[in-house]
Image (cartoon, rainbow, N blue to C red):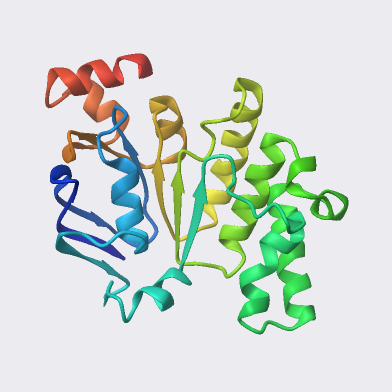
Length: 238
């Protein structure tokens, strides 16, 4: 489904990422963990086509990401960022349905999909009628997830989606995401939280200094870490 092949990226002459090669098969849930500044978010943005790699390629569903294809490919990918990233001038429902309406979906189709996503995320119509500033952190993230899923994408990318939430709200949304993820095809989750990665993903990739240093289940890597860094990083998951 997703192949990252020899991708590299530098900013101001300093290498931030790569070379990175990563395959994520269709239907797989993969978490990417690592210390701050290791290149996790940069990799996710390159997969989405928001950044162009200096070297290497990204392929999604057998289509090479390029200037000609990235617009169509992005419609196959849902994207969730920390704190939701909602447009403040639109209601929650307006945020969710914006792209579908731009693509010409009729009112009946839009309403049907919103009802499906409301049931999935536990957000009622009254909540969806509010402005982002009127929503709690957890509600904003649910709206962001609904927006990412509105077009029924093949892939869902999440960049620290729960990082700004308090511990109680974060734990509740983690439990809800388990069910949501199981209904999806392919998920890549970037997180600093190793227990969160273990809960939400089938496999975890550890990054350091812009490269991948180990891949496997959390249990596998705890039993046989490839380096002292991996051992220290996963120590809190024991």
